[in-house]
Image (tube, rainbow, N blue to C red; front, side, top):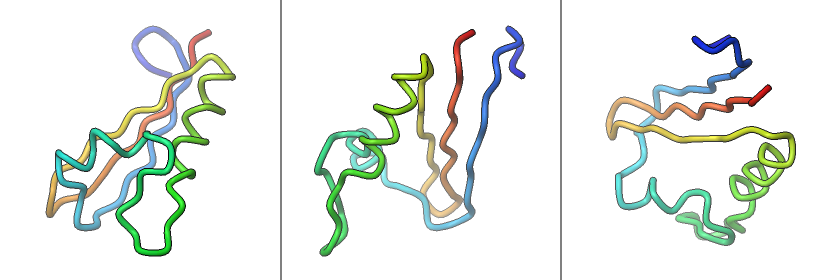
Length: 74
């Protein structure tokens, strides 16, 4: 639970991170940096989370890793 007693989940990695110009586009439908990607995964995830009254955010540091946070409003 966060400071306001709302449930949240963080998913993180220690990969190469996401560049800032790409990070601001990751939730745009059909945006992808992969040759064979479809660009629907994160936009679909965002839609599902919103339908359940929550938010999903991404934070990343190139060379360090990325954290996605899902926060549900109660």
